[in-house]
Structure formats: structure tokens, C-alpha cells
Image 1 (cartoon, rainbow, N blue to C red):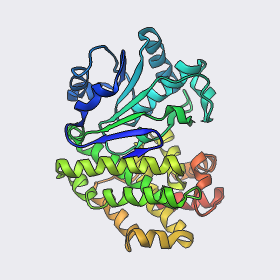
Image 2 (cartoon, rainbow, N blue to C red):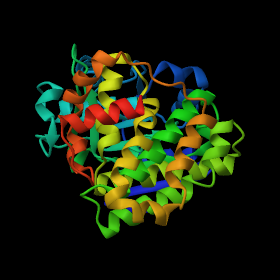
Image 3 (cartoon, helix red, strand yellow):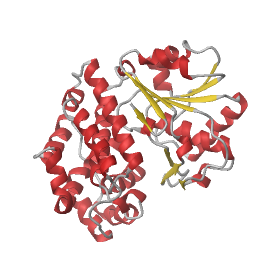
Length: 351
């Protein structure tokens, strides 16, 4: 399976293919949890010349990327490998931007602002959710405000992606749940956004068809290796769908919840998604029907299976959340347009 110029390897044990795609010195960008799970050792043991940056953090900031880039400059690698979840991938991609053109990461906010030649990038996800391995964007937070910035360039897309379900077996159940729900939200939002095309919608539907039969087993902690493999491929397909289209208001309204209340991304998106889908169904209801007749009710039932606790937000904060949500980039691609007052209503309904 290829997308643009990506080579995507998948299946149990596919990590062993890594050496064929690495030449020269490799820098692995990862986090302490991946080290503890043993995945770093499994990866470094395959390579002859490798250095490791293991200080990637959840919701990486400008400072996190600057620290990784400083380490990378001193290591002078020939290839960068992102090993972990979306945060490791985003830190690695942000580092690619800084190595190629210098400056600070906010210089690259938007699309196509990379300045020089980028190092080859290999993505090895250990979670099945973000789809970051199949996207050319790094989503990073500003220091201080935690405002999300999307920095994208076609050259930041991973050349090689390895989807090995053996690497997702170590995920804590809570992480497996949140990342699976995130992948589902990507498939659903990309399927109906205003930038979707017949080609991107095909990817969104393919992602949903991989995710739908296995997600309940994932959420219950009962998934087999084969089911985890389908989830990984579904998440990657959803990532390809986003790369070819966009997202919508569920992501736009989730980001302020993460910024102000430290709500993990997958939980924030699923808090908003059913309410946003009901809002959208007046214009894209037939697409939802095509995916699954009881789609919105089913998504709500998944929140229950995943034991997602409601997000507690003081009522007086809702206008501020709405004011910030309306400025989020993804919201402009929602199939049904809205204003700030609509977002106030949507937050009240969802929360």
C-alpha cells in the first residue's frame, strides 16, 4: 500500500524490515514510555549506527522541538525515525523543519514553509490513533498559551511507514481506547469535510471499514493481534484521508478543551463528536447513513464502552471556549458553517 511516495509495510514482525530502509546514522525520536515498553531496544538492535532522543512529551511544544533539534544538530544524523505515538512523530517532524531551515517552529506554521532539503523520515507508530505517520503536518503547541499550530510541508511526509501490531500490544488500555476513538473521529470528520474529494472519501470509508469491526474489542481490552493490525491500518488510512482532505468542528472544539483543562485529545474530540455530527447531519446525513444507519448512536455507545468520563467545564468558561474554537483552522472545513454563538450552543449540548 502506497500513498504519494510513501512505502507502507504492515503485519506482525514488520519492524524487522527496518534495516532495509535505513542508510547511514539514524536518530530515533521517542519517549520514556516506549523505552520502558522495550520497543526502543527492539528497534536499536536492528541498526548499526543509531542515536536516541527519548525526551518527547505529550502535546509537544515549541521548546520540546527546539530541544530535540539541538540534540539532532550535535548528532548529525542521515535519517530520522519517529518511534511512538503522535507526540513522538510530531516532535520528529518539527525537528525536520528546524534542521532544514533553522529559526523557531512557529516560523513554519501553515503549509509549504520548509526552507531547505529535509532528511528522510521513517515513521513507526506504537499507538493506533493519530495517523501522524501518514501526514505531512506536525501539530505543535505554542509555549505558554498552548495554542495548537499545524506546520506542514509535503517533504515532511514519512518516506517509509512500518505498521507492526506487535508494537501496540504494550499500550495501556486507556491509551488504546483514546487512540482508537481518535482514529475513528479522523475517519468520520474527513469523510464529510468540505475539502473531501471522491478519492479522499474512499480513504475515509476504507479507514472506517477497518476500524468499525474491531474497535469494540479494542475498547474492551480484548483485541487479538490481527484486530490490532486492522486498527493500525485503519488509523493510517484515516491519516491518509486527512492528508488528502481535512477535519472539522469536533477537532476545532476539542483543542480549547485540551488547552484549558488538559483533557487528552481523544477524550476531548469524542466529548464533542456526537453533538457535532447531529449538527452536521442536516447537510451530510446521507454520508453518515452510508457508513452505518445508526452511526451517531453507535459513536455515543462507544464512549460508554470506553468508560469516558464527562468533561467538567464551568459554565462561565463556555463563551471563551467558543471564541477560541471559532479561530481553529480545522473548523473552517466543517460541512455545516457556524458562528461563535453556534459554538456556545454546541458546547452546552455536549458538556
